Length: 209
Image (cartoon, rainbow, N blue to C red; front, side):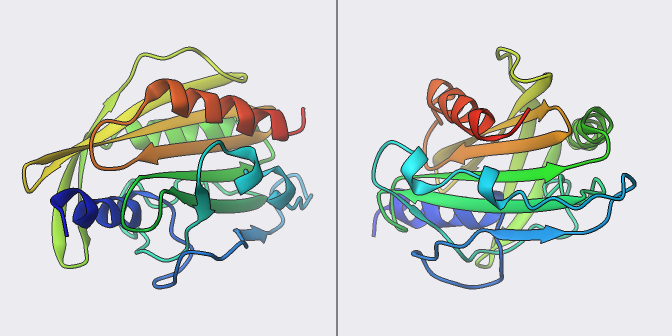
């Protein structure tokens, strides 16, 4: 197995939003949950999440991996008192190669308050060590210059070097009304900002005004 093929699954399981501690490629059900927020409403965000049919390429739904409990990258939208929450992740080119894409989506009593809370959490996290599959990966997190999407947005990247291979993962945090979504894309090598921004646009089109 090449270094690239060995590293991509580690990146997926360590930086995307895993629904459980183990699993396999091919599940079509995103994780969603609903609870009463301060507005007293409950909304199911599942219909607003990306699906394979929204993506261009040989994408499939990815399940499994290790949640980032105890780190600033651990499902930040879920910790911002979401009234409803969902997450889904995909792999392009099979579980052993290609790139990965993940989306986290939450609805809130106040989208702007939730956005600012999550952004503040991320900005207080310049780096993080993630242990997955027995390997510790040190990621450096930095803001990225990018166009503004939705009501407000914040782009950043997490970069690591593992076995001589540089891994760069792009993140886009966006508020649209009382919804906040986080798109993540990465793999072995640099991510494509234009492709990530394309999927941000696709994702926002599915979220109601």
